[in-house]
View 1: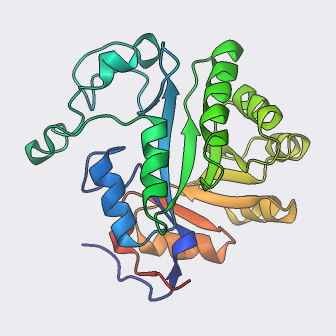
View 2: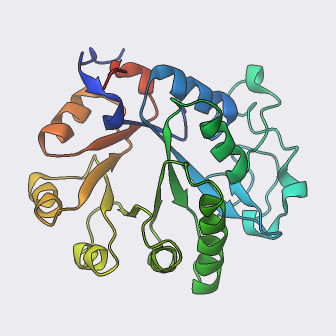
Length: 253
């Protein structure tokens, strides 16, 4: 049973986390289509660099949870993953859902004028070389599509520093569970406009500190309308949710 929806959620306030992932297999075309149909202004998704330079839409560091296998994602090429079934883990009716590339998802967004913006969460192995390579690949894809509406986010600071150098005007966001002691200083130093925090752990003092430093505060992963309302009252600009259909989005705003 879900909370009663607000009547006045603006599309820009709601982001579908890995698509409409409560009811559909995460990071798939069917999940993104369902999210777009719900009227959200944004979709959050995960992107990782493969061994052949392709960028894969996939959350986990390894196969095994949403697709058969046990290999690490960075060790694989697009030919290794293109035919994987990433749907049936959720339900047999989703058998045959295939992975997407970054380029395919950008094209999906651009195919229809009113499709949501995309928040890329870059997943990087724990070394600066891989982070820089991921930034270079994603910057190249974004640059190839000037009308692509997106925010680029990551936990990885080396990635964000590289992305800032490569795309000086690109909106960026630092992700953390709770705000690091030096998080706002880092954001100011590298012109990172957004901070993405765990909404379950956010308190009033932290919210105010982010807002007072003129950073855009967004929270994940908010699956009740009650908590979403509380966060918005604290100044949160956007909530990321697995359940976008629980939010009555006003598509006129």
